[in-house]
Image (tube, rainbow, N blue to C red; front, side, top):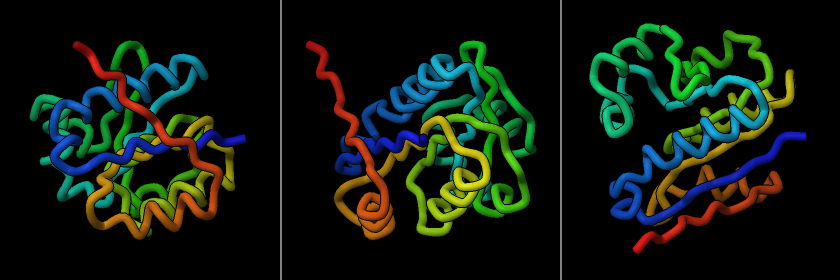
Length: 150
């Protein structure tokens, strides 16, 4: 069975280092399941702004050129709806960054072919939420909280 979780906050909150935190969470979950992470974006050509909040530019370029990188011992690769629809992927943890309806549909299609361990969605709550609202109404989705540190 595929676990589905979402971290949904106001856009300004998401810009305060949560990109790195959600990646760490996905890596931890992949370590738990002994699998790799598929980082999913709407369009590989237009994802630099998101990815550069997590990785150095040279790492972003590697991911965009279909190279697999290692993060804390877990393999991580980049996918978009176009590449997801052309692939048959083994069980993994999927991390979706600001997903469109097409990206959500592509990941759910992959999960129907070969169950995903987890689908993790990272998105805003103060606009453009229709796609994730619909996804949440169709599936059992758990909300992720954020630990406040003092």
